[in-house]
Image (cartoon, rainbow, N blue to C red; front, side, top):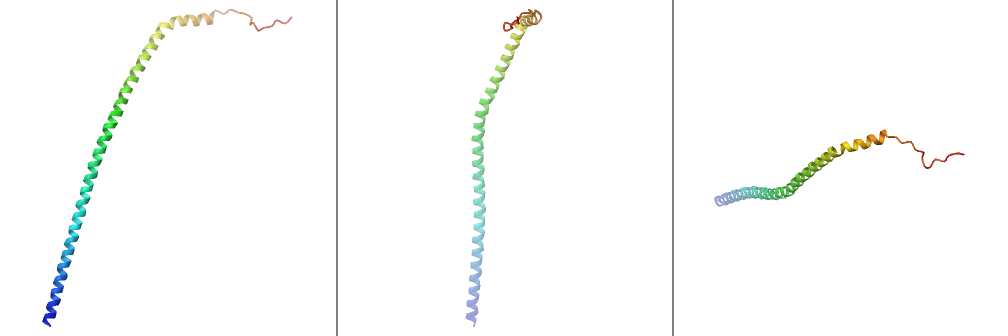
Length: 118
C-alpha cells in the first residue's frame, strides 16, 4: 500500500511540476506577445514619423512654390493697379472734355432713313 501511495505522490508531484511548467510557458508567451506588440507599435511609430517627414518635405516644396507664385501674383496685381491709376490720371481731363462736348454740343440732324411724306 505504501508503494501505491508513494506512486500516487509521485504522480501528483509530476502533475504539479507539469502545471508549473505550463503556467511558466503561458507567462513567457504573454511576455513575448507583449514584447512583440510593443515592437510592432514602435515600428509603426517609426514608419509614421518617416512618412510624415516625407509628406512635410513634399508639402514644403509644393507650398513653397505656391508661396512664390502668390507673391508674384501680388506684385503683378500691384503693378497693374499702378498702371491703371496713372493712365486714369493722365487721360481723365481729355476724356471729360470729350464727354462733355459730346453731351452739350447737340447738332440736330434728320436721320438719313427718314422719308419725307409728299
